[in-house]
Image (cartoon, rainbow, N blue to C red):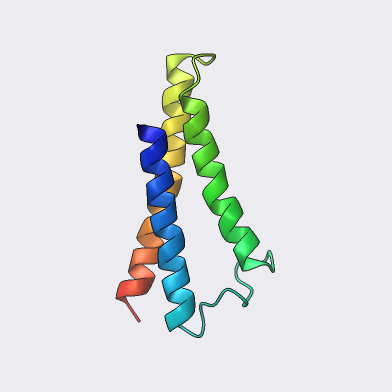
Length: 92
C-alpha cells in the first residue's frame, strides 16, 4: 500500500511541475535548473530514487531498522519535493 501511495504522490509532484512549466516562463521543461541541463531527466531521477527506496523498504531481506530508514528517507525526499512544488505554485 505504501509503495502505491508513494507512486501517486510522485505523479502529483510531476503534474505540479508540468503545471509550473506551462504557467511560469522561468520554470519550463526546456530551461536548465540545478546544473544537470536536462530538466525532464532530472525530474525523472529525482522521483525514481525515493520511489526505489520505498520499494526496497518492502523487501523482507533487510532488517526492520533498515527497512524503516529506507522508507523514511524516501518519504522525506518525496514530501520535500511536493512541498517545494506546492510553494512554487502558490507563490508566483
